Length: 174
Image 1: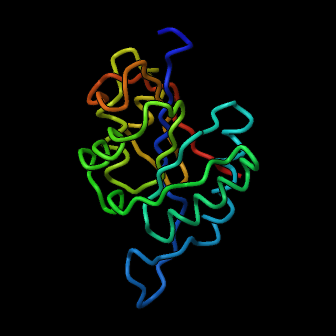
Image 2: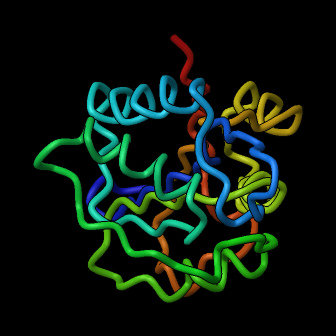
C-alpha cells in the first residue's frame, strides 16, 4: 500500500457505562471508570499520530460522552463529530453502510459505537495481512474504551470484507 493512498478507520467501543435505575438504554451515561478511561483513548491517538479528521458517533449518551472526552484530548485537531442515530444498536452490516457513505476526502475516520456490532465489523474488515496478535486480541474481546485501528487503500464506498489491515487494538487503561 502506498502511504499516500492509505485511509485509516478507528472503530471504538464507548467507555464504561453506568446502569442507573429507570434510565432507558439509549440515555445511559458513562460510569466514573468511563470518564477516567475515555480521555486515555484520545491521548493515545495524539501520541501515536492517529488523529481522525472525521468522527461518526452513535446518538446514545454514553457514546457522545466518550466522544467529548476523546475530542478534549485531541484539542484543536478534533473535528466536529457527526451524530449518527443509525449507529445505535447497529449490527456490522448497518455500521458498514454508514461508513460506506463517508466522503472520500476523509483520511482518518473514527467511529464510536457499541457492542456487539463494533467487534463484528472489525473482524469482518480485517484482512489476512492483519497483525495476527491484534486479530487474536480482537477475536477474544472488545472491552469498553477499546478501539481497533485498520488501514485500507480503497474507497470508503467499496469497503466491505477482509479488505482492511488490522494494525492494532488498543485498550486504554490508567
